[in-house]
Length: 489
Image 1 (cartoon, rainbow, N blue to C red):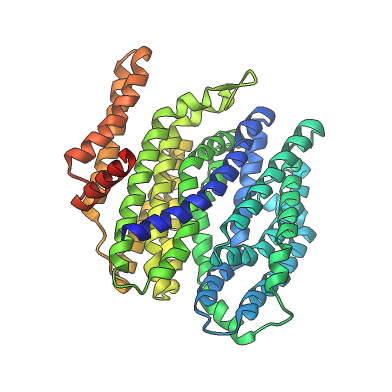
Image 2 (cartoon, rainbow, N blue to C red):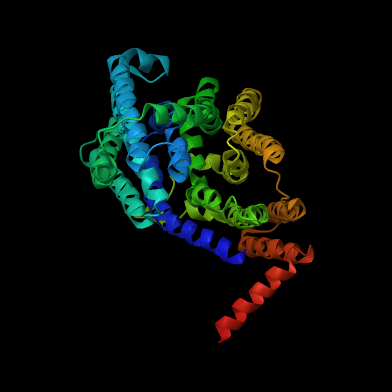
């Protein structure tokens, strides 16, 4: 089991290098935006990209997940047909959707409350959506064939191009908000060019209608499920805008993006997890393996959440070229960061628990599960934001992710029962909460000179509580001892 978990860890790490580097480059845009855009302008960008996230689900309509399923089993069609059929489908529908959006860009801008002077952003967003949908199947093919390095290089270059274009267009040419969307188009177009060899190596002029019907049957449940899941991720911005103002949304978005560290872990885990559980699903100890992986994922995530929560205020106050990393105008939202991090943890748990539904082909349940999460998020936002402002929006998102994780747990257990290590998971949760509360309590009482000692104490408390609660198993203790012996040798 340890070897298989290590294999998953290696794949996760390889994807993680590209993800971390790429996301870090993208993260650099957050301090950049906070120093060149007003909170009002940043609020407009956040609102627009929340709608792009929704539309991306419609543009892809489950074809990525369906491709993974049928390319790994080859139930219908040969390799070229399994690649070509969904690729041509996304190409045609993406072009049709984007043509309609460009034609009606002005009324759509009014509909989503984007100011008239920024209506051209709608057209650029349509191009980004079309180009990104064309890259879905080629990227999936690289992942399935474990061409991790090529996948990583293209992803990183995409973000490098986006970052460079943003800096040039906003600083040199002063394009402002529109420059952000032009940069997105440039990066997406460059990605398609880089993926052209992969496309040409896998495609042929064919379209298997029987395969297409099967792809749609498997993938279409992901559309309402994906929309609902995306609603959980981004619906708080439009609701926050409706109940507050653009500046509040801008502050919220900047601080929400500081949760990138936990988002990185979930993203790179997701990249490696799906091919992994499909490969090992039929092995005798698969369920025990999946349970142990969830425990380790939660432990790593808890450590990251604690570390970032303790040191986020030090991070944003770093000075780079005589400027704070995050402009002080945005510091009022720092309190949402720990809440966002815990929300991503529950999202990662949801990703893990999805394995059973995926393996047993019970994807028809996903719209109901994510729908529950979406409804929870909308209702909680409407209730919490008037009273707690942006902090209410963050708590609403966390509650929605937790609800989805609970719902998928009960559904998955019905079709693919796994004895998850619930007691050990509870120990991790207790240690995390206790350490955070201890830190918050003592920091409020002690002078600033002792704050860093309190933070180190909170980290030590987390580890101490896990040992006190006898979290490590005998097998894990022996594995740790073996590692120590190897290091000494």
